Length: 353
Image 1 (spheres, rainbow, N blue to C red):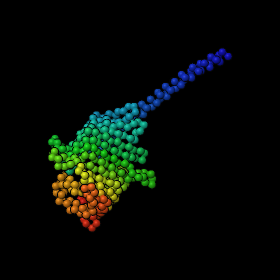
Image 2: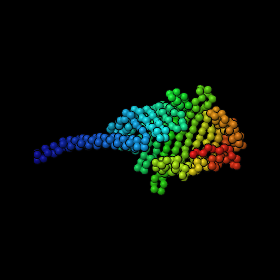
Image 3: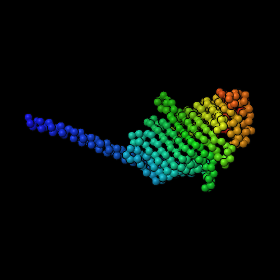
């Protein structure tokens, strides 16, 4: 009887110890598994980067991430570079920039965020070499088993300059920039096909040498491109596809406003033909259209004469509210790049290709 009581006491004492050591064993196993998963992921990431560089080299493109390191142990996995460059001599495109820092949570590898330091140098055919700089630039990409779900870029206090053999000439600044691409509606197989694009620019100031003749403007865009996502992930040349079958888009809204109150907003369906010409229908809202003409003339003086007739036509459809000229629900027709107001041809747009 005494021995049974002693055994019972021993079991009571050892039970908490067993739980403690079991907890320690679980922690050790989890930590070991986490470490193993991180190093496995880091190794796979390095192999993927090396494979991408090799594929680009095979295509005649030079690209590198100098000072490359995989960091973030133990919960994050990301690529860090001191500088980077991309050079495509066949197409005459070169891009070089400063440090990049990226990261994805180990338990959520489909969501990658990154931060890039300025400046960025860009050279492309038909463009003067550009130097872009910013205070902050962050981006993110989110993918799922079905492919791309969302990609975003947000930047603050951007400057764009021409860089002609080291002589930097400021072209303009932006107080803020946002760009987002999202997977649109799904098709019958549950796969997204359309691409929803949105953009916003705050305080876009074209440099005027400090004269104050050109005021800052704001711009925003929201559009759905039919089959745009399917085309983007297909790897096909978009221009080749457009030339062979054209394209369609639903413009939810594009808005342009000046600091002194001029505003233009347009929405409607658009079709880009295989001939590179645009057709569709647009509904316009305008505030003080003459101020829009004044802004265009401050940037490009001949625009005053070119747009003067358009402004006079709009007067017939406007109402004066609180001292402001407003046009609401104005219907425009686009037919093979010709902009029509009823039977009146207002302008003709240049071909896209």
